[in-house]
Image (cartoon, rainbow, N blue to C red; front, side):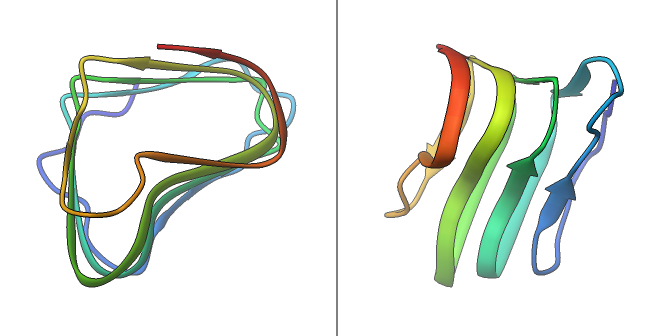
Length: 95
């Protein structure tokens, strides 16, 4: 489980391949450039009660593809960016 007050920078990249579930809970992602979170080749990711804030140069909140199960629970998305952009396919999305 990952708990953080704020994540800044170009993006948060998660690639776990054979690991178990990755959980982001009560996190704030604030980004002015690029994608805030990129998920690829993961077995299972849960994003719960997180806040995504885009800036004038943000291109996306969450971009995910080529992965297993993505669970989104109680998240807040601020700004004009699309909450989830799917690439390559996701086995299952739970909202």
